[in-house]
Image (cartoon, rainbow, N blue to C red; front, side, top):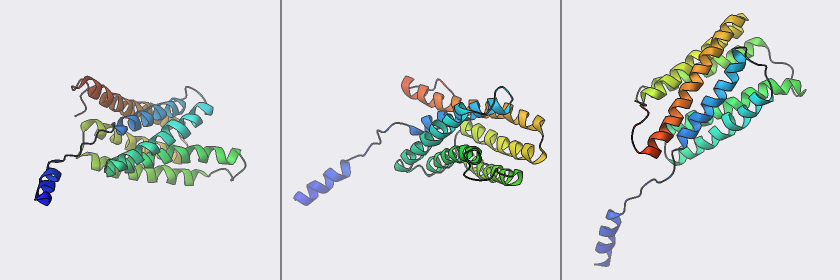
Amino acid sequence: MTEAVDEVFLNEIKITDRTANAGALGLMAFGMTTIILNLHNAGLFGMGSVIFAMGIFYGGLAQVIVGILEWKKSNTFGMAAFVSYGFFWIILVMILLMPTLGWTPAFDKMSFVAFLTLWGIFSLVMFVITLRLSKALQVVFGSVVILFFMLAIGNFLGSQLILTFAGIEGIICGATALYTGLGEVMNEVYKEKIVKLG
């Protein structure tokens, strides 16, 4: 009798995920860091500590933490995206800093082009996956793909013009990620779809 009661009781227990939407933070971290780097790529200011600090901490560590939180929510896409792009930012900062610190020789153009191209291919596959997700994420990942390939081509050809256009496109890319992240927060707080994310 006790076992039957226990079984009925257990069948009525519902586990609800009451943790916050970490993905919103990840999108904002990616977006703001992408904007700040691409303001540089567009020629508005030089490379420096603002970009490095954003890359290490907000674009880097914050996204890695978000990815781990997405893993706990069983969100494989979120985990793969945020951990990957989080470490992308940390790697990029190290690529730029390691030669100046005397840890490695300066990186050559072709290795950097290969680096950007691989990230472009990764982003392209992630974009294809977003076709089953929201329109907002499709725009974010689609613009990331364009950005990586523009940067790869610009660095390969040594074209400052292409790199400047890549910077402008990168600002748009970062803005779409920031819009999506802030939109998710706003919709949750206001408990209605104020920001359309598709």
